[in-house]
Length: 384
Image (cartoon, rainbow, N blue to C red; front, side, top):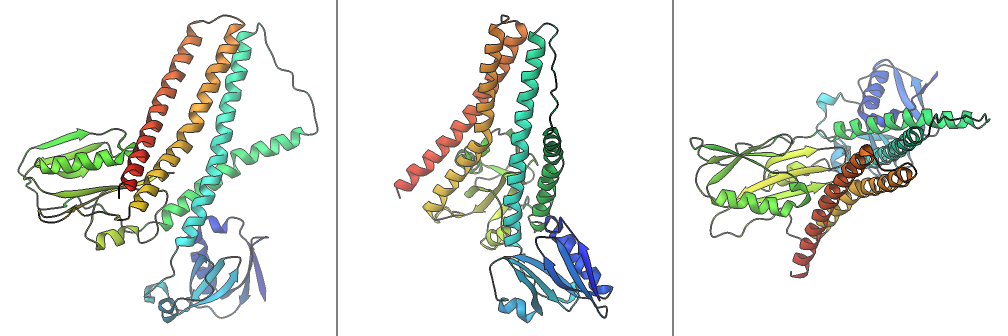
């Protein structure tokens, strides 16, 4: 007996799909086939068991030895999609397949859907601004909607744009966050610093646009006897306790996405995690490691080529964020001036232009700071 199940968004929540396959096996329905294009799962009726499933997105054709020894076997392989099954319950399994491929895939798709949605959101805002300006600048202005058989296509596209696209971006974001949910607790009790000294709080805005200056500032604070205790969730407030001077090397690391063992690798090397963030587009971490006077300051990444790519990645990410915003506001200013010329500039027009100008200057300055940081990294790379 064959059972078909339609799951259109099964790849949006891999963990839920895996648990669903496990529950189906417990009911006696054993996974047999998956049609990627029709999004249908096929099951065969059999004896109930406690099988555990894991889904991978990878080109690997063979099960790693450590995974195979734990009882895993492929039951499906198509177009990079792999489904592995283990006849034991999850509590009795010592090793599990990694999720890096799925995390990377869903991360890319999340950014694609998110970018499409933000682009149409910006264009919709511009449309509303133009429409409002025309109505305000014309006496008794109105619109006339002309009938067309293509309106059904337009309405369908708009429904998809404001439902399916943001839903996909949200679900994929949740998937990436869930699959990346590994140990990342910060080490606030970092080093044996005095807790009896006075506590001071320093604010730091915009450090993520020039992280090398934050590293230098934190190291100078440590050498002056101000030991870092913790950093606020937003990453703006730095709390220090007045103790003893010490040598601490800091590294501010930026990643678009993190692989499954990112934190474990650096912690095993002796680095302590002082701060971590995980926004929609960017992920920051601040690492610290103490060293003695006769030792060289440790580096999270010793390869200068990696640091150059790090600076380039920060600059390109900020350009992708602020570039379109700057272009959009420049276009709005030009459009507002052109419309105002037909009826004269009033207080509202000047207010809008000034506000838009402030946004352009602020975003442009942040973009320039990222560019200066990349130039400093490039200069250091040439000198090594």
